[in-house]
Image (tube, rainbow over all chains, first blue to last red; front, side, top):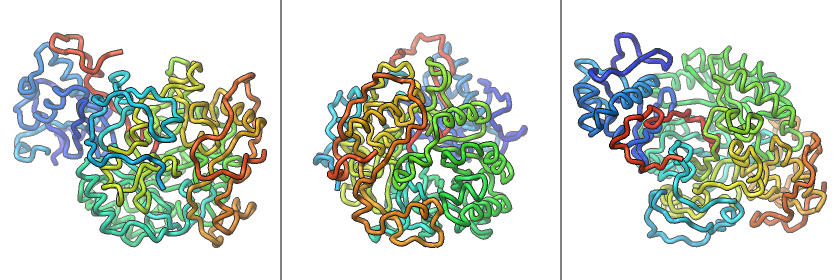
Length: 112
Length: 475
Length: 32
């Protein structure tokens, strides 16, 4: 797994997710669908995150395959009026290393 | 062994939100004040967890009842191996099932799990099958070689280690855990640190004797690059025998709460102190970090060494027995269809606590703590910080109706070894099993004045139990 | 209290905490 140029987020750095960036689910994360959304568990920092909307689950699952966040949101059917809110949620996920920035050359190795 | 009525093996697992409201069918279910509803009360994670999940988030797996130590307060009354222990292959089959269910991790304990010869093999097997492992140990097998293995890339970050320590000094620790046990734990911490294993946990059971050492515990954790974990003593297993002497005094609970609020940012608690939330404001803002949820039978459970499944490791008793994974169709079947677990997967109302303004914060406390002190499950926790528990115990003692359930099982060593803690030497336990299973007198010491008057907790023994026919405990 | 199935089609006041919630795995009672 390759780190972002500025290093792997530790949970304290002011990372923000922008719509035109490529991201991917961290390889340390297990994503478990539930009737009410999904649970994401990070084996490294032992954080458990509740993804409360099926749309968000689809976005997170699509991140690694889409060119950027905006494309993943569109593919998941999220209305554009909500994109900022979803970006804020993704920022929350980024700050606990649930998702990571993706770089050219990562594409073949997108997380399961 | 189970008291649960027959259940239909064809019943398909249903998602919690689709099940109709149900009346309880098990002894515990009838004693717990639940709504029977299956719809979430809100959109918080805790609201979903309250209804239970189709698979646990994590679970405790006691791998063996064998142990090199004889801790006075052992929640599983461990010491002797049960000859019916799951075999290596049976254990691997359980791991396979947990992988299919996507259980995130297991907390392997016992007894002392590392004295099972196949422990390391099962550890590797679990990690290779995407089930993370935390294991609880007294450190006896964590030599430099093992520490290096645990710190190696082969573990892939999927291993967490919890070293048990119940005193910041050998004097305090060894009194309950036995001579040399403090040194064993420290040596294990040293070995892990030296091997580069980051972030081991020091797991402390808070007692009357060690609550004054919280700063020292933190210092030990910092010194060895470990994280401190403070947990609640429950009157479970041998803990029932030493509860009166060891459980924190009311003022010590306050001390603990204040310390956690001030210093607890990097301290884990396993959410075991949600009953202390009532020290905060009535609006719940004083709650400690955590879900304030009893996860038993909802998102966590216990698998014991012979494949019995219980609601939680602090409730090893027939009444909390959900099934056996060998005879009831496997773990998933037990988890999803056990009548006991169905009864637990509903929001709890307050029962006698409903009128207390702190109920939303404390959730009525711990089921196991009430059960093993003979208190009704729809009333206050024995350590209720408002004092309702003390009053309830005193009132029941006076009325002569408090019956403490006998342990369903006892795996303690028959004869004490040189590891026997001083605490047990002072009050020798009966050597034969039968007398160990009869109810023991459990005097309640009135350590604090109850602020309450006229509170009526109800009287009478709780239902079910392990045969407390010989009458009320003398107090 | 919010209903879990509340429609979000036209919701523009969605906040991040309506989408995610984080807890420590050590944060529910019932395991060692």
